[in-house]
Length: 127
Image 1 (cartoon, rainbow, N blue to C red):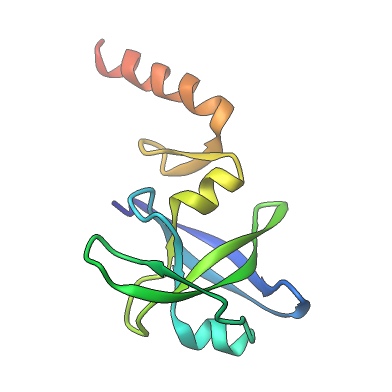
Image 2: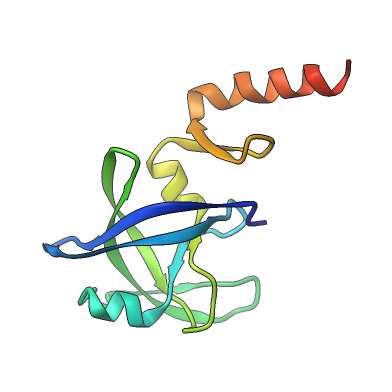
């Protein structure tokens, strides 16, 4: 359910100089953020966990990365996806940041604003 892209900074949580900017698909249908393994390995992100990564039962390695969205930086769990898989900004990360999706304007908004945005969009659609 990716609907737009967002540029973010990702970094190793133990060594912030190991970082880079990437573009990700905002995907509230994905539980976890997913990043190709070559990027996470370049940042020396440790494979600490295993998580089910898709609707099928496919277990993937996962680690902690720092992600910066706009002016805020937080640690979040990231799945080591397939090399060819999309870079996904998932629901867990969005919730950690308190962000929701405004699908009409294709932007991230604070969760507190999302209810207002949805109500406004519904009013516009019913006129």
